[in-house]
Amino acid sequence: MSDPQKARQTRPKAFPPPQFPPHRPKLFARMPPAVFPVLMGLLGLGLALRRGLVALELPVAAGELLLGLAVGLWAFAVFGYGVKIARRPGVVIEDLKTLPGRAGLAAATLGLLLCASAVVPYAPSLARAMLYTGLALHAGLAALVLRQFFRLPREAREITPVWHLQFVGFIIGALSAAPLGLTALAQALLYGTLPLAGAIWAVSLAQFARRIPPAPLRPLLAIHLAPASLFATVAASLDQPLLALIFAALAAALFLTLLFAVTWLTTSGFSALWGAFTFPIAAFCSALYATGFAATATVLLIFALGLIPALLLKTLTAWSKGGLAAKTNAAEA
Image 1 (cartoon, rainbow, N blue to C red):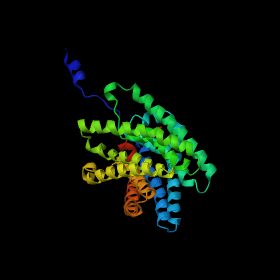
Image 2 (image 1 turned 120 degrees about the vertical axis):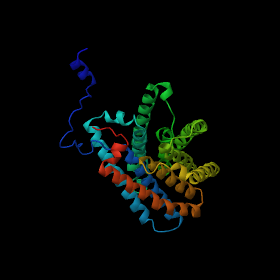
Image 3 (image 1 turned 90 degrees about the vertical axis):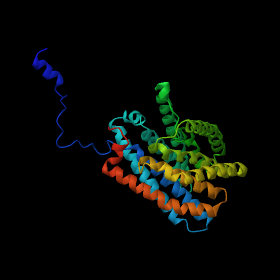
């Protein structure tokens, strides 16, 4: 082989020159779904504050103000993601390929169910429409997740705590169905999601016994608290006090376990996955109020009123600077 040929084979691969000026995505073109879990937490916090103020016989204006702010922020984020979808609908499938994307999109549709619960006292007809729309959208998302899951190689299929959001999250619809008088629907959501949650808890426990989750994914374990808390709240609203107390006790056990393990859960430092701490804590507050433990619920609510807005601010700041999209591998339209 001649020397020129050898030189061509050993020459480093040529890369295109850097783009100048640097590429800037269009507005909302890389909207990160990872913003939705913490917004879901803020909505849940507003609902918990509403319950708390009523239980403590205090003016409810602060709770309604927080709920209005939460609904507005959620609607703005949905608008941003809607712009992204309008530019290129395929981004939904691409976002579902990442764990933060799957969690975020599930939280986005569940946010509509929480918004329905927020507006029940003001516009029952609107709340009913939001409830049915939210359930339909979440069912479509769950179908997409399952389709993608079964297309993966068997060794790549893994059940994570995010499955609670994707498949048990329908229970949130019962929070508005019960006060709207849709008792049969609320009961169907409760008893339909109970076995799904039980299966996910069992599989997750078996996985945990075999392998300790890597540090960056440990915050997702907090999601296990949410279904138990929601089951307690919904059972109480359906006049099933024994079932409500059973799930409140389960939620309390899960909460204490997470509390004792908080240093281990957060050892990797702040990330978008810390949004997984927000909505379970808010749901647990509501469950405690619903089952009559107002004093304990109030202490936890005060803590949540500091934690959830702080995590929201960090997440929104990361979104505004573009770091959230980059760190969560959000698709670009």
